[in-house]
Length: 449
Image 1 (tube, rainbow, N blue to C red):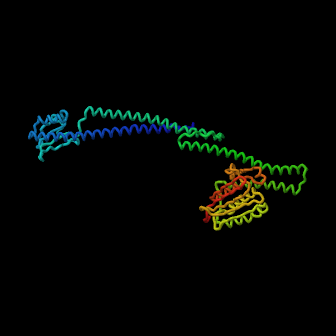
Image 2 (image 1 turned 90 degrees about the horizontal axis):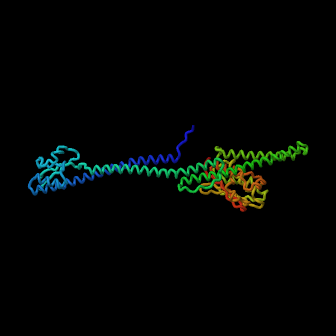
Image 3 (image 1 turned 90 degrees about the vertical axis):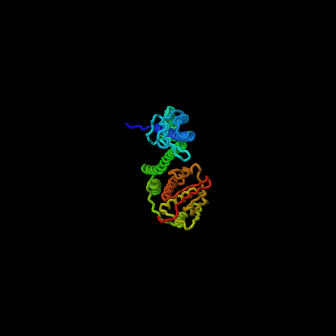
């Protein structure tokens, strides 16, 4: 049985809970420890200040009495400490106890928290005040520490609850657009290409994903339409010559017609037409394959184009179309002469096919922005704006009836595009209906192939 993974919402919720637990434990613990440390530091500084004030009071008392009076010292200690201190010892200048407060407890317990404050009068040592630098823990302090621990625990619990609630809401907000996109992708896989746009989710990445799925659906819908049109066009292209050949052969077989050179020539022409169609499809498949072998040579494009145009000029002359050239010199590029010639031949043939007698086709060559630019422009019928994005698609014809009458099968431009891209270049078209078209080929300049 195939194991089902956790949903995106479950993953996000788990992440939020883990973060909440860690934050709820670590942060309050740090806050509590820092607060207690600061509180203890405050008490220590306050204790030191109180002891300094007590020492000053004892020095004043010594000045008045001319010595240590235990009774009066006890009164000062009681009034200054707010009660009977249990961790203070007063020593005279010889180190003898004047008042072993607390029945001597604490004396001799030398620890890191005990401090000794020297007492002096007019530069003369009169005694030492020995005390605990950290005040003894009282009930109020213990209550304060307990409350701090309770507040930290309550804060941690509240943080976990709030984080889990926010995690649930945020995880739902993130997972819902993904779920919708996955559902739309499933619908596309079932052939439902035309989908209504999703309302924005407010999350940029999720909206990009949704738009990507919608664009995929539209692209697949267009490809499906092209596929159906392709099958229709191929069927028509194959059916017409086959019908002609079949009718001729059947008529001869039935004795209706005699075998004549003219009828055999007609059959041969239709078979040649079939062969050409199959050859063009094979060329397109080869050129659009993943591996396309081109033998690049550093070529003077002006000389190359002049040779091609000289060969094509008689065809244009017979059709009454003027072929004009404007070729910039010293423009070189790495090209496969055979493959690139097929590109130029296709563009010239396409321009001638849709140009009327008396028209004009111009071929230009120039260098621009590090590229060799070849343009073939005609003043023919032009291409409708709706058809421009598809002119390089295989078997696509803007005017199928007219293209069929003039011999076009919608393969030549697809072959030209594949060949140009194999050279590392680009091919583009601009056109206006009734005004003509301009095809632009760009190739990288210069260099040995």
